[in-house]
Amino acid sequence: MSIFRPIPLGQRIPGSPHSVACSLPTLRDIIGYEEGQPETTRHISSGYPRFVVHSHARQLCAQLGIRPELAGRSLWLVSSAKMATALADHLGRDQLAGAVPFCVDGIDGVAHRDTPELNARGKVFLQHLGGFLSSRAAEDHLVRLGVLAGAVPEKLFLGDSTAEVKRVLSQVYAAAPDRDILLAPSGMNALYAAFRAINALQAPRGRTVWIQLGWLYLDSIALLKKFTATPATDYVRLGDVTDFAAIERVFAAQGARIAGLIIEAPTNPLIQTPDVAAVAALARRHGARLILDPAISSPFNVDLLPHADVVTQSLTKYTAHEGDVIAGAVVINPASPDADELRRLVSEWLEPVHGRDLSRLAAQIGATPGVVAQINANTRRVAAFLETHPAVKQVWWSLQPGTRENYLKLARTPDSVGSMISFTLHGPMEKFYDRVRLPKGPSFGMTTTLISPFIYLAHYDLVTSPAGREELAAHGLSPDLLRLSVGTEPVEDIIATLAEALG
Image 1 (cartoon, helix red, strand yellow):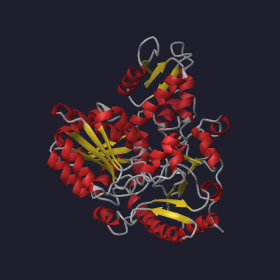
Image 2 (cartoon, rainbow, N blue to C red):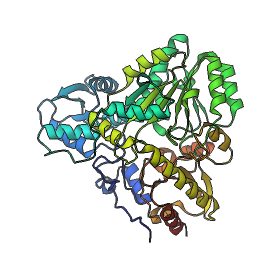
Image 3 (cartoon, rainbow, N blue to C red):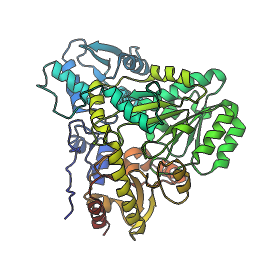
Image 4 (cartoon, rainbow, N blue to C red):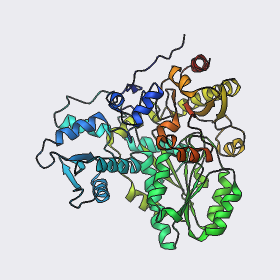
């Protein structure tokens, strides 16, 4: 009998108050979540922290909203006074928006007029920059204010948490020194800081063009669309990661104006890998800087730093493998021509990481090599099962034909495949998704197996419009694509549960 049991809508996965995933067990639930339907959202008190405002943060807002100076206003709680200033400037301090940064009882935030438009703009801004107050920080404030009796007990690292996290990361980044490993409150904040730092160096050199190679994670795409100098001319998207000739043509035409490239290696969700070494050499010849993101497989599986000026990663994935910490890191390549300036500038753009989040991460990170090895072994077997099942139409994973050799050039071992498998079906996706008994929710790189209709979750606006579906099709993305992150459960149970739903 399968170990997997259906998880009710909104239940935290894996169950900690700080879990980064929550259960979305049917496609109807996914749609209700995306459209903000009350019958769905009333069940969801937490979710991926950059998308769902945590119940602790909402409770803290309610507590602060009692104060006369904040009453009747929308409140955002943020990671620092610097982030509060940035958000207030973004929303507008004029009479129309009335955005004002505040610091009350050591809590940084922004108050503004309570309108749907301003609320949406504030949430998206913090989502893109990774600027929300963390759930543990909110919990600690509630305890300090006497609203909660105490924090929920959890295993924490008792020593120097920053040193422990950097110690383990240094082992996978070729003994990188502490000064080259910079910690962030999320992978998105890490990418934002690296992007802004490179922009600050390259713009005075007349370099403002950024290249996206392959389909990126939605907030990475948003970063390029919204923060390049002139998006209509300075944002270049190249969809085919294997078309090196197309990359060469862009450099031949605009090489002196190119600030940098952002590449996920492999990409999300098609798990395709470009010839990273060739792209890196081309970028160096033209003075462009290269940001590489190993999130899909993790730096425990792929070695990207020798090719990058900067590696940005989400520590939420694989390192926080118990699924209850959001964090990130920027790693500077000391061989980059701008290494010294990048260390300084990235540090200026990064947000602080809450101490208890670091302690929780440090308590898990030492076990990561063993966890990753088990995930890798399970993924190989699940991929082989899906590739040969008659109900499965197409499978994408790190060793897929077409980009397999590019991946193996970066892989630390031939078995270093990561957790991610994407696939489509010959039959209806909804029937399978609703039926499969695996945990269902966002995120990946956890000991818990997770499956989701990723395009619905990440790009619902594209799924629900003809133009959006055309854009997805142009990049080889089906709205019915399913993204599976394989965990450490017995692989026989994972396969049996998939087989049951596939029929």
